[in-house]
Length: 239
Picture 1 (cartoon, rainbow, N blue to C red):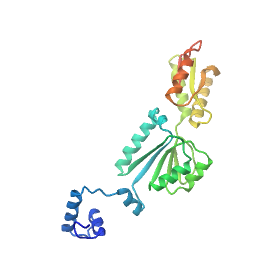
Picture 2: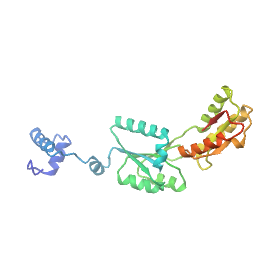
Picture 3: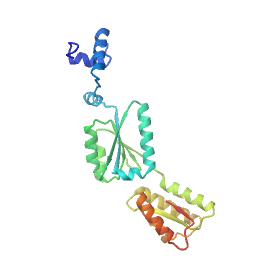
């Protein structure tokens, strides 16, 4: 503003393409902006106007879990790509330790996000926080009924049933299941689908072939070693 001998308001209007400012003044201001390597703070501008054109992708599990799970990396990639077509920027947020959802929402509010895609476990406190949030939330893999939230569910049960059916058609009967986690909804769905499909096909559900395991590489390696010691060996594994 000092370089072109005008007010900050005039500079702001010129850089936003306002028709209220003459072309000659706009050109002077743009020229000085280039010389000074000026970049507008779009986040601050959005906060003033209550619209930052920013969406948040929040992975509320340890970051290493994200690195070991290609499915969520693909979800983030597709989310970011589509947001870009709508001229939204994406704020990626991961954690070292799981955070309460109410704390996540408070932090995202401070960034002025317009909406949030959330990958997280969900308890009653978390549901209440989502209900009170100033922006809408989409949950991945967790069911919620709320006018403030939507959910994208993975059909773990049907997927597991199709997998068992496919393996059976290939001639497999001794099929192991890896990934039982009673506290994880998707794990319960997969195990239910596995057991129902096995029963439907007349195959024995052998408890010794069902393994508790978190969804990470190290746990998978340990279960693999246990599977290798089984006699007789399973002929296929659903994990």
